[in-house]
Image (tube, rainbow, N blue to C red):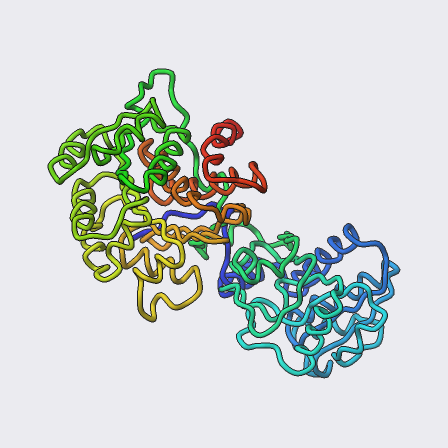
Length: 491
């Protein structure tokens, strides 16, 4: 299966891919010495824009990250900053480009230890980069603990030392930074928690690596933002069915979930909305949204009738639905109709004891799942799903055949073909009852308008986060759909 290309402007690179980008740049004639000089200069540019001249401690590690630190120290000193440089290990053990730049440093090289922080009001963390695979120990650990205990202003080179670049995991301890400067493209750790909480303000600097090197790398991970996907603009000739007909399966007891989802689907552009609900609850739905069709759904024949209308080209099932054998049959019936389908909440928990049955129903249909971590863990079990957030979502999408939007502080959207996107715009106050139902409805509304499943999930997640940010603290789920029209206008 060929994987569609990620736009270069949105690409997120793994540690190995960033090494490949460096190597490709050098093959094109940009020396490693030049790349290191440019990296150090980029960090100095951020420092001098953000902070006034003050005593700074530059902490260098034994590898290329430390080489960047020597460049930073030299340039800051030349600009008149009082600089103290400390190195983990003897200078004689530095190799390659790092050794070259260390030789240009005209100053003392102190051994790395907590005492080097004395008198410094700013710290440059150039100890370890994103490729670190073990926890900090010894003097490096002690220095980081001192930085955090004393709340020193700190700027990281590449990633805060102690952070694993591909996962965002913190390997023991890492400094809490006010800013981080990385190079060419971000890595997953810059976007995923817990590392994202330590990165501070992120700058992705150009250090002379041509964008064309991405052609040979073919990244599959993206930062979720407009440009990764495009919204459909209605044409003057469209009628309501051209804009898609969304079917939302509602519950008779927890009615709010489906009602929130349906409203979101309409606000994001679905031309027609039908609710299929138990007959006694019809008045509740009808009173809430006079622009929606309400149809009785009391058994399999009713659902077959709803699905018989081919204009209903997308279905959401799950919000508010209880677990029962009857619901499992209903979910299978929806998936067998081969419409675009969003599976949320109860549509996932109904199969926690027999997930393979759900995956068989999905087949090769257009399906988006929207689990939070608890629902994900109940549905996807085993070692393949015990890794980092990106790996878990990728494995789930590949196994299930569905696009998986793993909801959380940094929602990951994974496609069966291997593409992933990390979302970064969601504020913490989106953690409120009903917000997930709104997200499911947004994705449904985009699907029925013809957006492909991965793009619809990415766009829905981004709009959800943007709406939450626009609303601000005090948000409740009912606010979210009402903000969407302004967001669409801005796009």
